[in-house]
Amino acid sequence: MQTPMFLGLPTSRHRASMDAMNGFTYRHIDQLSSILHGAVKLAGDELGVQTFGLQILDLPAGFADYPAHDHAEDRQEEVYVVLAGSAEFTVGGEEVRAPAGGVMRVEPGVMRTVIPGPEGARILAIGRPLDGAYERPQDFRVGVRA
Image (cartoon, rainbow, N blue to C red; front, side, top):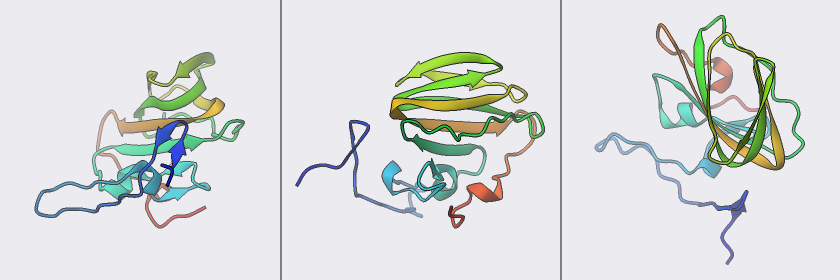
């Protein structure tokens, strides 16, 4: 039996859940609940993260529908880590090419969007308001499917 692959990375069918006695949650990325036909994996909510936003973006090659947005209203700073593939971010009007291993921080009021490279992109997105507590948007909670 051949190991399943995504963007050249081996995947796993192993799934563990919260170990109440040890205080941890483990999931494999490919087993996380998702929205938008698998493009956004709800890592933060499924893992039980409470103090910051955490999503995995699995964007196929040619995907051009990632919404341009900023976080001026909720003052959320974001960090993007390209885990596999490559992506071109447009941040504050500037284009930034990011191969696997690229890491970028974006201030709340700066407009941003991303287009995956020719092989697609797997991106870890982390965010938290600069002041105040993080509140997970309803759309990024397990149970919401699109």
